[in-house]
Amino acid sequence: MQWASRSLSIRAIQDGRVTVNEAVVRYPNIHVRPGSDALAADGTVLLRKSARPVTVVFHKPAGLSGSREDGKPSLYSALPNRSGWFMPFGSLTKQASGIVIVSNDPAHQQETASPYTALTADVLIKLHRHPKKTELTKLQKLVKAAWPADAEVISIAVHSKGKRASWIKISHRKGQMRALMVALKTLELEPLRVIRSRVGPFSINDLPAGAWYQLADSDILSLDELIKQKPADDSVSLTSIWQKITAKIAEA
Image (cartoon, rainbow, N blue to C red):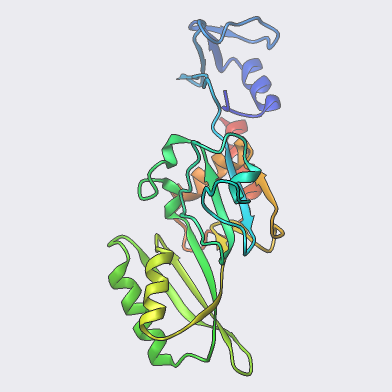
């Protein structure tokens, strides 16, 4: 029922914090019927989900379609039952690469309403030339005007420079990739490559191109806790957050 790990659940039962049909039980090996028996922990009723939602973090490589295209490889090719999946942080074009969050949880069906949109993101863009400081200022004004009212441009700066080309890094919250591309075109800044290098605690540095993994229950709970905290820097370890959560449960 995704309340806690097995060891913590057993400890809670032995401490008398769990009830079955409003009766306290202190022995884990008791037969229960989840469909009809009422289970509660620390006074909170536990509900069993008929189908557990799945959330996947995917490092989409460039050249792989980010949409459902019949007969063509896409990131959906790695997922069972291609229908019913949502992208709470938005999709990436075929040419772009980087972090994509995919979930079949109805809580993320609407991109603007998903709690995951509160996470910050870093986008690296390779330009065909070195941008002027005034152009980056204009770029920030353009995307701010085009993005939703609750979107935030955290920073736009030059990330690195080559002899001709350069990389800029755009950190944002609730920004839209399509509007960003339009703004670059308006300023005649040609994007040669686009990489969404980070979304919250998920980074391409930890996930090779083409690789993906399913978030564990502890990851999802840690992510929910991180979003509630609204830190300025959310590029943290979910494991460290989960350790704090389990410590609180153990102390309760």
